[in-house]
Image (cartoon, rainbow, N blue to C red):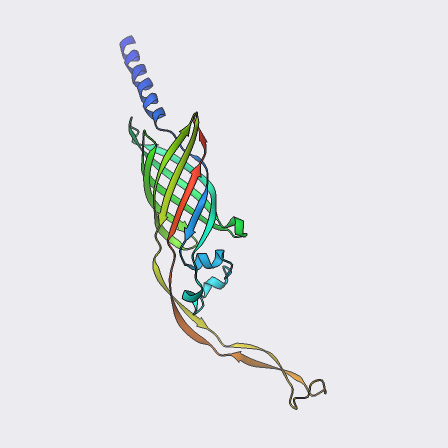
Length: 221
């Protein structure tokens, strides 16, 4: 019996030491992201509001420009298939961009990957943002300074080509009518008239590629 307890104790100590060699890097994240020309970049550049993006303009390709913005968020993670040199990880990352521009662009990613004892990691998974659902591919490395972990991660979210069909309806408004063309002589009146006729068109656009780098902070416990 004592021999069994001894063996189990040794196994538990070895297991804990193996798990401790690969750090948990959950914690805050700050960074930047570059977005190629897309509806999201239009919003961040102040060209359009979110309501405007419901119907993209015909000159979309002329006015859409890429943009760089800050990121702030948090990463949670759990582990599976723990090993001495490599462990499997599942990460949940929530980020918000555009706050320095007075904007709010949230995104959430769920990634599955692996982290090595040296601090190198890679992961892939779905990403959900205002642009829709895409895949995110990430890689990173954990820099250590004493008990401080500083994980640096690079991520790429590829965009896709889409087409939006826009239908503009006839617009009516009150128009001031002056029959004799002489202002303020008393014969003016208001009439409800069509000021623009409806039209329709297709806009081909890209949801935008996103390239980001984030830095985290985590104390080794």
